[in-house]
Image 1 (cartoon, rainbow, N blue to C red):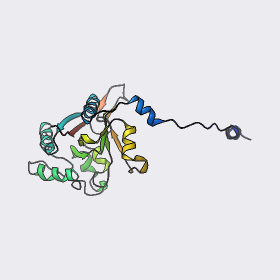
Image 2 (image 1 turned 120 degrees about the horizontal axis):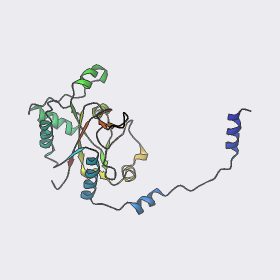
Image 3 (image 1 turned 180 degrees about the horizontal axis):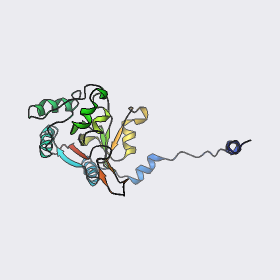
Image 4 (image 1 turned 60 degrees about the vertical axis):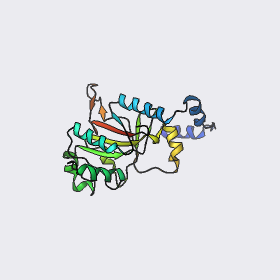
Length: 221
């Protein structure tokens, strides 16, 4: 018998110790207080801004004006959008009239990889929700808004409805029923891409967008 077999035999012969599952719900109920939507929005904003994201409060009908202002301030004349979504369709329709080129992700990446990686300065997607405790956006990419839209362009602009901000990741998973199914890719984004791998010097944009802009829809704006 080899050493490996002897180790496995001892492990298999060890008595099974049944332990109760931890009461996760009770822990969160004791350690995380309930917050109003406004308090959750404020906490989300505080933490994601600490990670160098830009956050703008916008109204449900006025977010396009702020999107235009952000693009103008950054001198961005081209924005990748998803016309298969309501927000992407609106952005493409109204920004094009204002002189912003709004291409869409309309074909396999193999057919336009060079353009995507070298000629798209910014993209615009929506967030499914967010987590206040960590200042984290939740994105569920799909056929209309593929994952590369939030990974490749140097500037990523995200539309977030503050009504979909949860206190914690646990609350998000419970209320959205994540145990019943997840997409192929789900993204948790807590700021621009950054790394300190080289000489512990923090650099932005190493593995993704170097700028993250959040347009947060709030009812009191």
